[in-house]
Amino acid sequence: MDFAIILAVTIVGCFALRNPLKALPVAFYAAAIAIDVVYVYGVFFGLTRAIWIPLFVLIQN
Image 1 (spheres, rainbow, N blue to C red):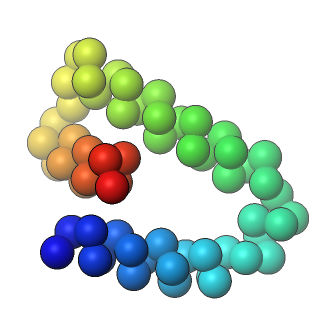
Image 2 (spheres, rainbow, N blue to C red):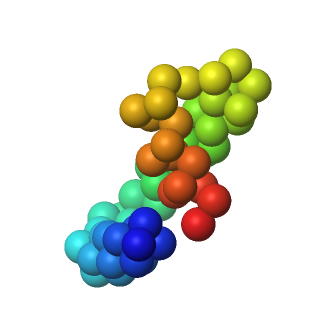
């Protein structure tokens, strides 16, 4: 069920952010790197459950 929700949000996000993505690709790359850094930090040092569970599902799927 989590995968279906993430897939639906991703599809909607792709259509909604089509023009900003073309205009500012560096900002989106920076956001992706920031999410990866938070994930790696969470793996080694731990995060609160409210942050870790959605981040884990997002990265793993």
